Length: 347
Ligand code: SF4
Ligand code: SF4
Picture 1: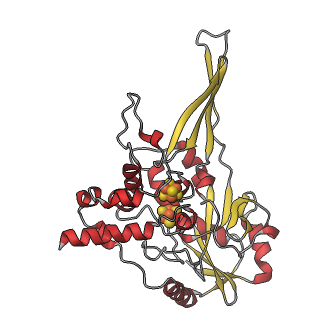
Picture 2: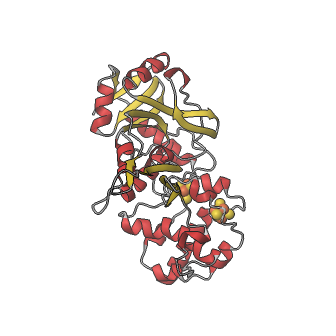
C-alpha cells in the first residue's frame, strides 16, 4: 500500500477531506491535560503528549445507559422496554497514540471474540476509523517498548501518521485506512526509510528496555503465591485511579436506577481495586484484602491476559498509572519483581 505526504499548510484540507460525512475526533486541551473530543479541522493539534484518559471512553463510556423500562398500565405485560444504546456515529479519530491503539485492540478482543459480542462496544468501535500519531520524541513516562510495543506501532490503527521532513507522513495499515487516504487525493511518497530511521531513534530514546519476558514462562503458581504481594499492596489506597485511566481496563458493573414507574439500566466502569467488586451475595469475598486485589490487577495485566491473547500484555506502557498513582506504585517495578521471581524458580 502506498504512503502519502500532507504538506504542513495542507493539514486542514486533509482533515476536512477525511471527516466529510463523519464526525472528527481529536485530542483537545493542553499538554497532558487533553482529551479526545469532537472538533473541527482548524482546531486539531499535533502538539500534545497524551490524553489524560485513554481513548477507551469513545467506545466504553464511564457511564452508559443500556435501556429504559416504563410501566404501561394499559398493557397486560406492565413494562415497556426501550434500547438506549448509543447510536453509533460514523467518525474518524485523529491522534491516537500507538500505546493506546494497542490497548484498544486488547479490549476489543474482550468485547468481541468467538464466544461473545458486546453490541454496545462493537457498534461504536467499528464505526470509527482510527488514525494514530507516532511518538517521535517519547515522553519520560513511556515504556511501550518494554511492553512489546513501539512508539511507531500500528496495532489497532487504520492509518499511522508521523511527522516527516516534508510534512505529515501517512501509512495505511488496514484496507479501510487505505481507502480513506486514497479518497483524500494526496501526494504519494516513499517514506519507508524515513519511517524506519525515525522508529529506531524513538525506540532508542526510551533507553534499554527492561526484560519482562520471564513473566511469560509457566510458573503461574510461583507468581500467585509470592509473599511480596503484601508489601506491594501495603501503600495502595484502592482508589482505582490506575484502572480508570488505563487503556486496557474494561471491568464494569450493571445497575438499575428505578422508581415505581420505571427506570434505566446502566453500566458503569468498575474496578478490581474495590472491595465491592468481588463481594458475593452471601457476604463472602474471595478478594477480601488489598493484597488479593493488587495481585489481581498485576496478574491480570501481565499473566492472565497474555495467556488468553497470544502473549499480548494488558499493559501497553502508556505510563498513566505510573504518573497518577497517588502512592507511586509502579507497574514497571512489579513486572521486574515478577520476572526475577520466575527466573529464580526456573533456575
Ligand atoms: S492508583 Fe495506586 S493507590 Fe490507587 S488503586 Fe491504583 S495502585 Fe492503588
Ligand atoms: S502503564 Fe498503567 S495505565 Fe498504562 S497500559 Fe500499563 S497498566 Fe495501563
